[in-house]
Image (cartoon, rainbow, N blue to C red; front, top):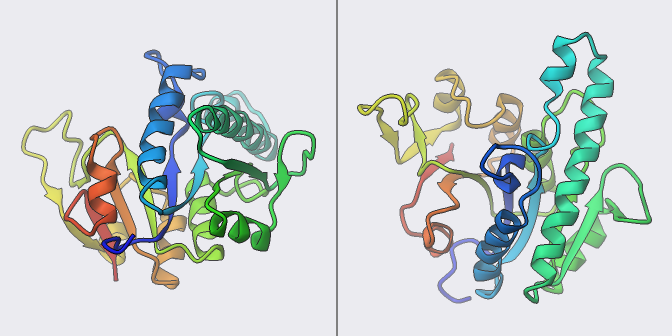
Length: 238
C-alpha cells in the first residue's frame, strides 16, 4: 500500500460493460472479467466502491420516445442497476472478494439499504461495496449517483471506466486525428460539452474538488498503474 496514490476509489461502470457482443443483457464472462480487474486492485489494499449503470438492460430513452412517464422510466433503470450489481457481486465473491450490495431503494431481501456509515465500515473491513439504484430519485443519472456516493464515502478519486484510453476532442473510432487530453479542468470539460460523463456529475465534482479519472478498464494494467500515480487516461481536476 505504500506506493498508492489513491487508497479509496469509486469506480463508475457502464451497464454495457456487463453486456455480451450485442450490447444487451448480462454476460457472465464479462462480469468475471470486470471482477478480475477489481480483484487486482483489491489485493493491492485499495478500498473499492462501485456504481454501475443499466444501459445493458433498460434504456429509458426508448420508453420516453413512446410516451412513457420520465419518472417511471427512471425507476425502471434504477431497478435494472440492482440486477447488474447482484451479477457483479456474485462474480466477485466467486473469486474470493468479499462484497456488499447497497440499494438506494429498499429491497432488504436482496440488498442492504444504503447507509453511509455502514458503507464506510465495509470499506474499512476490506469489502467491496456496490451502490445500486442510483440516488433513489428520478431525473438523476448513475454518473451523478457515482459523484454523490464518492463524496459521501470520502473517495480520493472518481474513476470513470470506459473502453477508450481517455478523453478525446472527438470520437477516436471515427476520427483518426482525434486529440487526446492527458489533463482537463472541470470548466474545460463542461465547455467542450464532452459526452463522457453527465454534466451534473462533473459540476458536483467541481464544487467539491473531487478528481475524475477517465481510463480504459480493459487495458490490463491501466487501473493498477493509475492507482500508483502513473499518467494513465485523462485526469479532470481544478
